Amino acid sequence: MDMDKLVSLCKRRGFIFPSSEIYGGINGFWDYGPLGVELKRNIKDAWWKDTITTRDDVVGLDCSIIMHPKVWEASGHVGGFSDPMVDCRDCKGRFRADQLTFILFVLSTEGGAAPAKNIFFFGSGNELEVAEQHAKKIDKLTNGVKPGESLTRTSGTFLDLDPEVRAKFTCPTCNKEATLTEPRNFNLMFESHAGAIADEANKVYLRPETAQGIFANFRNVVDTGRVKTPFGIAQVGKSFRNEINPRNFTFRSREFEQMELEFFCHPEESAHWYKYWRDTRYQWYVTHGLKSSKLTLRDHDPDELAFYSKATADIEYDFPFGISELEGIAHRGDYDLSQHQKFSGKDLSYFDEDRWEKEKAGMGMTSFKQYLEKNKGAEKPGYPYQYVPHVIEPSAGADRGTLAFLCEAYQEDEVGGELRTVLKFHPRLAPIKAAVFPLVKKDGMPEKAEAIYRELKRHFNVFFDEKGAIGRRYRRQDEAGTPFGITVDGQTLQDDTVTFRDRDSCTQWRVPAAGVLQAVRDLLDGQPIPGGEKVSEGSE
Ligand code: ATP
Figure 1 (spheres, protein in one colour):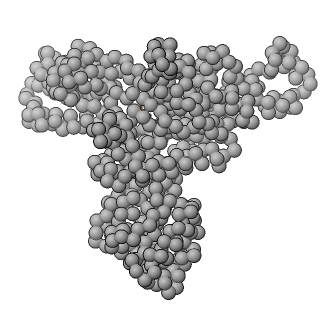
Figure 2 (spheres, helix red, strand yellow; figure 1 turned 180 degrees about the vertical axis):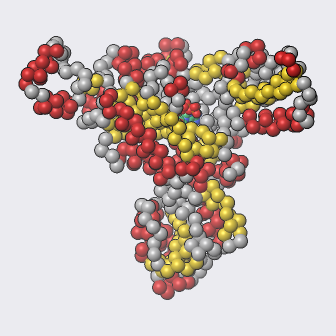
Figure 3 (tube, protein in one colour; figure 1 turned 60 degrees about the vertical axis):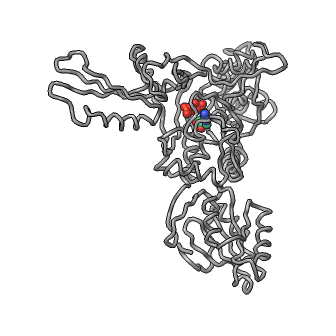
């Protein structure tokens, strides 16, 4: 699938627009149009319903975006949330050093003499491939090396090179040589000031993740929410990161939405819950239409893990611009709550009353007395009854999810000898669930179609279209990803049946008009396409 085609469809059909476009746009910010906002909302709603409302063990939360600055000291974001950044002194281009990739060809002469010639190619991220194509054009490479010479090829990122080699780098934007600075750490948090005076004391940050609001409210939820471990707190909301190099459409933006769950459990059960959430989250994407052949669940190598993390896995999707992260599932141990306990001075441990009662009931009186003796002076029993819970964190990006579902849905196929563009969304995620059409604008068809439309509209987002040839109207809905089409025609007026068209197969059935609402409802619930007489298959 060609990314440019998707970007242009998103613009043309009102899924995604560049932010502030009438002023030339602003790098790293995007707006969702009428279809896009429905799609993204359906994704967030599906997540919310599957993660919170249909479960017994997760509650929701909605925190402020700006929090006490100490939150970000405790979380490590003030000190450590930075990317190594490289600037071009000439064109002022700015790159992430870990994404600035190079290919280095070293031509050496026999006997280990000094290299006769070094050829560098640079690019950011996936541009490495482009760099390689350029490299192949070089005479030396296509014609082969001369006798007595050998050519070696290495590649890596800017960070892998010695400083003197870095100093010779060519800027990937302006192509000037030796203009790049050494990498410098650049904090990704947006800063602002709360109050009239713009000084250090009033400095605040736009949150770079939603998770910390959950940790900061852990005590509140435990004290008021009647929750017992294992339990989760989840939130959906905007996050902001001053990304050095926003790229790949909405994939890396400076303002984006996250869907995060912090699942708190007993330390001894954390390995089980880590595996549970890792598998559950992977399956969620598959259920909603991302083909497992394009999804990877990649466990991090031990050397990739944050120092506090016991295990982390990324759910990655094979985007047209390369395999990239959709969601991370991390076993964070008790790191976050312990940090907030330390920085706030508040007790964030949890007393596991159930476990304590169970143990008490199971212990003989002697051993119970011994236990109390051993833990004398403590107001409450210690571990394993009183503990700082371990946390499993599935952290997903709503925009990255939306982009993956768009990429997956985009297809070009042929119907009745005509090429069409279709977005094959899972019905639960589709922005418009059904479109209702009168075949022609006469004989009472528009009135009948409108009555069906009004009935459906009370329950779902549906669309009414009476303009133009019916084939054209179907195509427009295919491009919007509308899974079902309902057409009122001449026969409707005789026997009160309508045609029901399936977007993906273009098959049409005749179904009673009175059954349309239930049919759409069943289909959205994952039931098969309704029975009824098949009137056409795969053509129109
Ligand atoms: P990356 O390595 O791609 O920068 P990350 O590992 O820093 O991502 P996390 O901090 O784990 O990402 O954030 C959790 C999720 O939030 C990501 O999996 C992604 O879906 C989303 N996310 C993070 N940064 C961005 C961004 N700049 N634009 C859009 N979504 C983002």
